[in-house]
Image (cartoon, rainbow, N blue to C red):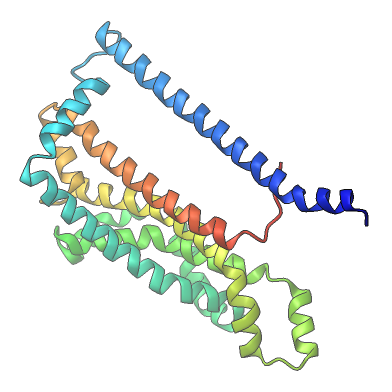
Length: 274
């Protein structure tokens, strides 16, 4: 290989990295501009009364309401309650859903035991179970933790099952050729292969869990972001309502972005698609 060819091969990863960064910055700029244009149009429509400010507030009024609300003790108390409900329910979904999904995908006999319950509950609307859950666990945080668990559990457990069912059978055959035990295959091949799928399931579960918190608190609660939304809605305080919606949206965006960074780290072996 000549010196010029060697330099070309060495510079190729740098070119790909530079192209990727340029592409990401361009898409980020396009997304930022589209959001800014939407907010400007929203404010313009509100100022010209194209929309009724009584029912849909304006971005400026929402920002003013947010400045007032962050100084209120009740706002942070509601945030604390909703945060506790989400973290508790979502943690349960992870610690229970991942083992069940992994082992049901790995062992057909265990799958035969749990799959009827997973399939049956998956197609059942979780919101329809809210009255039963509230009757059983009360209107306190416990009922919201249960509904968050149910909503976040299924994306996680089904992603884990899918990961185990899509294992590279050639790797498993090669390991068995070298007399590897089932436990060694499970530990060294199966579990590492599930990580990208599990992270994707957890990301989907975040959205479902946040929906569950709000829906549960809207249905029956004495505190939380959903309770605050209900109270503001009854008083036609749409600007304060949108602040609550914005808090939920930003929470979901931050969590999914952080998880996306971790997911890209574990999926670095995948080829780039232009």
